Image 1: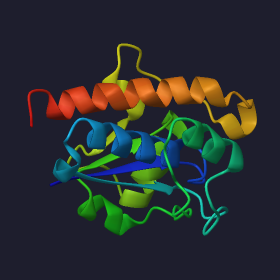
Image 2: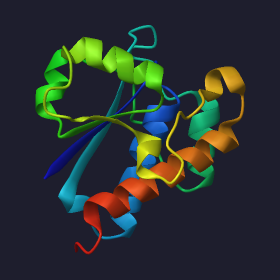
Image 3: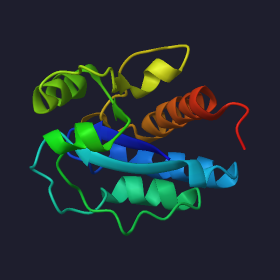
Image 4: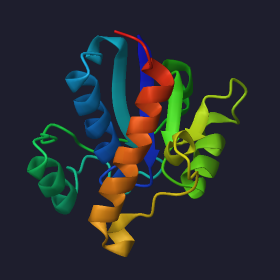
Length: 153
């Protein structure tokens, strides 16, 4: 089973959105048995907090329940536990590399690297554009799903 960890700054907006969007996509594709998906933050400032209310509402509007999720902080042990650690922006990736002591096995990537337009997913906490984050996360998760499981059932 492939283990995937999505990572953003505080684990209350982008990374839980990606976690639950990918879980939903895997379920709908009949592939949920092939992957374990979780999320974390590179900062501990939101530790224990639920998913940010605008993100919860957005996910709920698409039939996705994330009420059980509470923010956690990424640790060095996550590098060994997960096959892929996927950041939302370059700043996350740099902090992930510091937490993990580098990336000797090439496990660290960015979500939009799985699309035709690699780059950062803007933090809606600051930008306020949750719809754009939703679009970016969905596009990234679709690309990731295709890259990892194309032709798999």
